[in-house]
Image: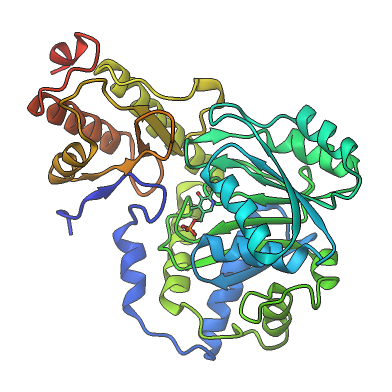
Length: 376
Ligand SMILES: *Cc1c(COP(=O)(O)O)cnc(C)c1O
């Protein structure tokens, strides 16, 4: 077990032994104990957002994208129109989902290092009265940029429009309070900041909006209205549940509470992020985003400007030292990414930085500063 690599990736990520051990039991899908597990998970998830009065938690089998697609397909009526705010690959995916589902949409795209602003959204909503919804990525995981959720939510609300938030990589770590941030739906998943294993998403859907969403979805399996109605009536998942994933998430949530909940999780990730940024700066690796818009979730670094650097070689060598990194996702500049989330602390992050430094030295890659040799 101790030889298992540390995943510095934004999901799947490093999970605790306890969480993995929770998957050693088989559960019957209509068993009362399993249904209680599901109910307890949903209740705890709603509490993280302070949303139990206003929203339902609708779990859905599949990866996070399944839940995003289900939310748009269920909550945006066929005659609706979505304004999609884009500054990275996950924003692009939102637009693609609207396209595939046949929902009308328009896009507003800023550069990958530029947050969407509330002023942008104000202007766009004023200009197009047909818009019914706005879709936003909270932390755009393709770079790690944080978009100003509260300010955008207030503008959307003041226009009487509805907000759909992909908070996949921020939920559980960055504070969001449903009593202060108006939204119709917020989407997250088991295998990100809650440190569960991948396999299920969940949509926090406004109760009134979900009640009015019957018949919107043109998919059977992805219909959140139906999924919720069935679960409310029977306590069971509509189709075969990812039983082991639910059990692991339940155990992960226990540890989340023991650690101190959102505040403690946020603090640990912020410490991880700071350790990573300081350590990488000391060996001459520059981060792509300015600190002010960097979420403590995942950091994009510029690749060293040296012909001896090749990502695949770098990746394999760092992996051999026990750390799994993540390729960059930018089209214009060569980068790589390092996640700050998962069951890992500042010591683990420092060990990862040390491994990177050693590998760059082995590869004889220069990072543009003389600090590399000094740091070793
Ligand atoms: C992880 C993630 C998703 C979901 O991606 P999957 O590959 O379907 O798990 C969606 N949006 C964001 C911002 C994410 O970080």
